[in-house]
Length: 293
Ligand code: PPS
Image (cartoon, rainbow, N blue to C red; front, side, top):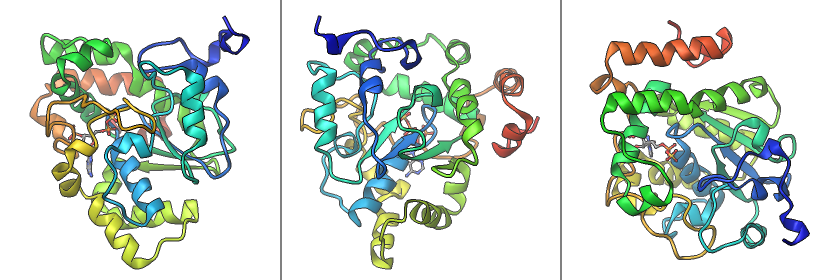
């Protein structure tokens, strides 16, 4: 084994299809970088699209969002972490990445700009259920994500895996950090332009009014739904044109609603999710997320 391949410190986590600790340990963040950090299904892809559109002033010519805004820590089949980091070096400045890492596992806090998107865990749980069911069989196998036998089984798996809780708990101490902007999915839904202005002012990127209008159009739910194929390759490539769909056609940009969980979730399932939040998160965080029980 080459000395570069020495096992990274435990803080970067264990290797898994969706998590390469070598990338995290060796990534060199730049001051101009933006890291989008979210629990799964909390508006990650939406934020990838918003930031890409803001950076380019409006561009609908890209093939796959993950080629222009790569998923930082995902393992790419047939590519070493060194090759992946080299590809990252060649991305246009300011670089934008997505990550689902906890704060402990995120490189570059204090150096890069960090934008968080949080979403009601009940909606994230339901969205993730559809995510699994809507994946192609090949992608499910490759990512080692088995399909649950029922929604109830899914809720139990989701609670046990606890990615939403780990992520939110780890980032909460950074809520007032000057290089961190924490946005809520529900606010993006009710006041998209106001939140766009917050992003522009946080990043200090030059965006004129006409570009802003284009960004708003290309980041709208309807536009993204109509171009679902640009958003459904999920982390397969990091700069090449070798993306394969991870989802069945037209199934990634799904409903995009607040409170969608009500269609599927029982009161008992809802309680389990909220009680775990109450147990693990600070009361102030629960209030901020509007999860008051
Ligand atoms: S992932 O797989 O973790 O990256 O998923 P993520 O992108 O975080 O979340 C997917 C959900 O976001 C919805 N979505 C949107 N909502 C509002 N507006 C826009 N433009 C938009 N684009 C994607 C998407 O439909 C998923 O939510 P659900 O509830 O499943 O519809």
